[in-house]
Amino acid sequence: MRNSVIILVAVLSTLSVSAFATPITIDFTGVNDHYANPYTEDGFDVFRDSYSHWHIHSSYNGTGALFAHSGADLSIKKSDGGTFDFSSFDLWHSSSSFTVTSNLGDLFNSTTSVADTYNFGWEGVTQINITHNGSVYLDDIVLNATKVSEPATLALFGLGLLGAGLNRKRKNA
Image (cartoon, rainbow, N blue to C red; front, side, top):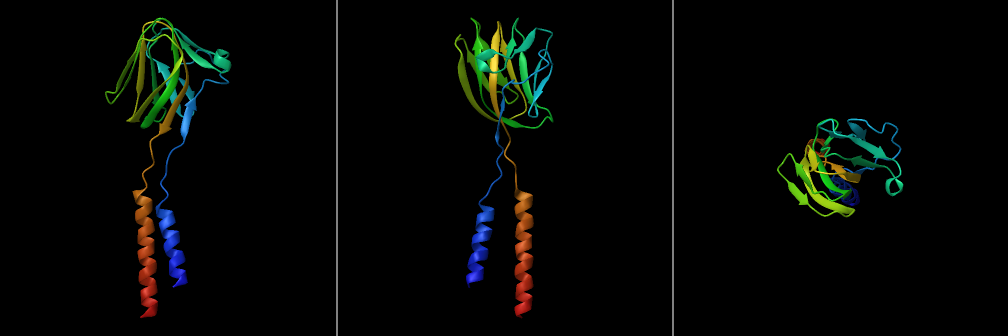
């Protein structure tokens, strides 16, 4: 009886664990190539789709930041083309409006000209686009790789338990 309780607790605790991805922050710190296109960090690409000017300032707000001016539109995607969740970024823009869109049709517009953290909470996107008509500083982009699905692992675990149970039943018979 005692062994079956221990096994039951072990099985339930194993099944209660789900796999989640950890947040990733693109912070443009320690960058040597100030004009790279795309800029790649932690498995994500930040790129511009035109020849408009951008560069990375290493002294913005004590860390690095991407400075895009002359209306240089920016995009963010995973380097392997997979999906991700888009949480937030810090952005400052001087007297210009900006728009953020995703491949799923999510839309955000702003016309303020203050430095702020903008929160999104968009899930399962493959690309984020930032358009603006002036100059922007972009920093601390927070993303999450999409949650990891575990049905195959759980099915294999269940088959193992079934096999162990049938084996035990055969020994008792």
